[in-house]
Image (cartoon, rainbow, N blue to C red; front, side, top):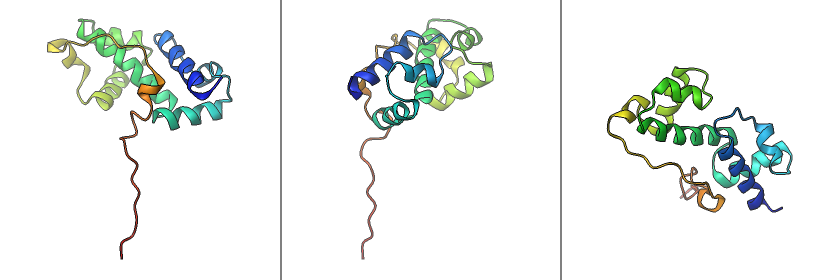
Length: 135
């Protein structure tokens, strides 16, 4: 299995188990690599750590549910956030607005299946900076 296939298996596992408790060990078991190596190639390819990706992905699903009228506390518990405050803090961090605003006028499509090639370096901000000294 090459890196792309292993990472796609990891992404599929995360999406298939988005409402269940997920640990890094459970995720890396899907890749066939060691936890360290899988975590490293995930971060290098996708641009963020695995567990941050899990949180981001859960919040995408939560955003969709909130836009369909579900209560914030119900969505927070459904996607395994321990507290309403923790959910709100993560939501504001990733989206820039509180989850309570989603119910007002936001229309969101359900999240599509992730693809490694599309997600590659999505979170890295594009071009890397190459500083140099000019004399």
